[in-house]
Length: 446
Image (tube, rainbow, N blue to C red; front, side, top):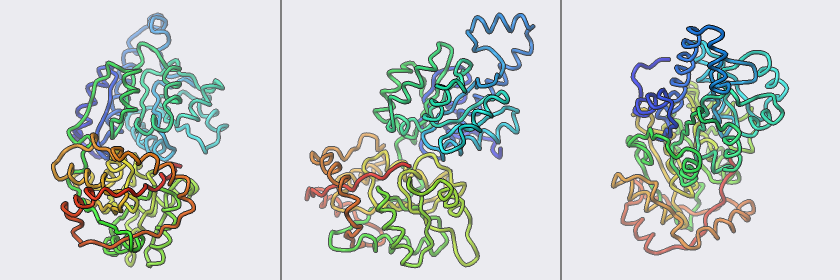
């Protein structure tokens, strides 16, 4: 697989999973969490098969009866492990890693996601035994409800990007877990942030779970340079964006531009195209096939005369998705609504010890959260305790602007401060001024 030394989170998680514990794997994006659970799951399968090989047929039947079906070989429609992911893109990425592992370790995996043929998925499950199923929640639930897939042999269930899964629908995840409940079944929760919703899920279902967390949890990548650009209300924010990424784009760097709404994505990509930059889009209203082509184009090195396109995206591209190439510069055209989103966005760059740039465009409405984040970064503190919710009108403004976001243009304001970004003193002055502007609406996840 091209590596010999485990990452910190892999070293922490592997022994716990092999010991058959419920485990929370918590580490920043890009730290190797997928292999941290896939490797020990596959090893456990191999260990079980080796043990089965030593038994007589009568002993296998006896052992299976005592364990209510959990000590058995691989059977059709009955996987031995499940990985549940919140999006098709992430599920496809996990499946590609599992498939590659299967070439080395001789185990079968399959992908069960929405948007693909249900008939084909039924056929695959019924045709031959499958060790591992990677799935999105809704399609997994549908196949189980119609009895095309059974949970009786599942020994390990993984909730990847658990923070996203529970934020998208706690009850749906809870229902699936209850259907798979068994005293010998173990669960693995994987997340780049441990949010209150994740803590609630742990307390309700896995109170004894062991933690495999790294020191980098809730901290920004240490090799990322962060700049906070003040955007006053009397200038064009879209022009600030173009000016901010022009140099990076011209050098052939991979630039990822985050927006909070689909409308904002469209406005940003239109302006960058007008400025002569090559741009692709990645958000929930872009068809799946087009999103795949966008990721492929973004990951390529470009041609002799033109580098890879800049990618303008919502937070759909912030979590879990592996571009297969280094992201050099993350630009937040719309400042995130909370620290969780800031961490996920910044986690797209400065991976595996490589350098990266992060630039946040800070308008009046963003100033309090931006100031707190900048202070935490400069003092080396984690970001999980920060929140913009201390502003008493924040939630009301979010609801109001979410309703009106589609009616508003992306005219905004921007005067680029110096290339070095806004000094702490300037941001502090803004925070003390106590601006009351509202936030833009949150973009769809696809």
